[in-house]
Amino acid sequence: MTVQPPTPFPRPQTAPAQTAFDRAELSVILSLYGRMVAAGEWRDYAMSFLREVAVFSIFRRAAETPLYRIEKRPALRTRQGQYSVVGMDGQILKRGHDIAQVLRVLERKLIRPID
Image (cartoon, rainbow, N blue to C red; front, side):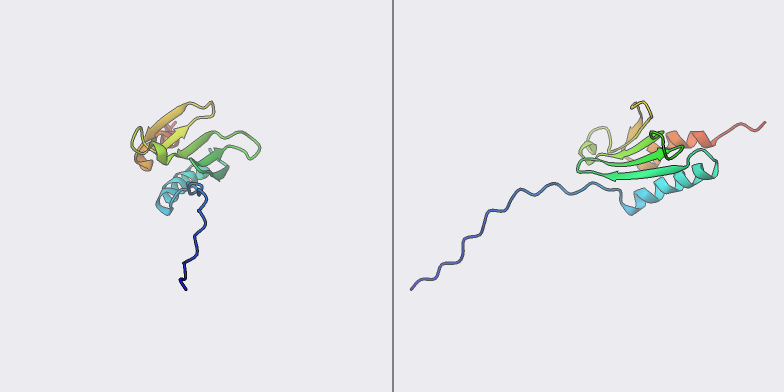
C-alpha cells in the first residue's frame, strides 16, 4: 500500500504588512514635536498606520484639522523619497529620503527674531 502525503491547501494572498515608523524615525519626529510644544506652537498629535502610508498628524488644538502631516510612503522610496511633510491645505511642503532633512521645513517655525 502506498501512502501519499496530504495535499496542502492553497494559501490565500496575504495583505501587505502595515506601514509604520520605526524607533529612529519616531525619535526624530517626537524630538521636534517636544520642542514645538515647549514653544507653545503645537498641542496634540495623532498617528495612523495603514497599508501604504504611515501618518503622524500634528494639531494646534485637539478638535481641529491637522496643521501638518508627516507621511511615510515606502512605495516612493526609489522615486522622490518616502518621507513628506504635507500642509493643512494638502500641499507637499518638503519630500525626501532623510526624515531629519524633511523635518527642517518645520524647524524654521522655532527660529524667531528677538525684539
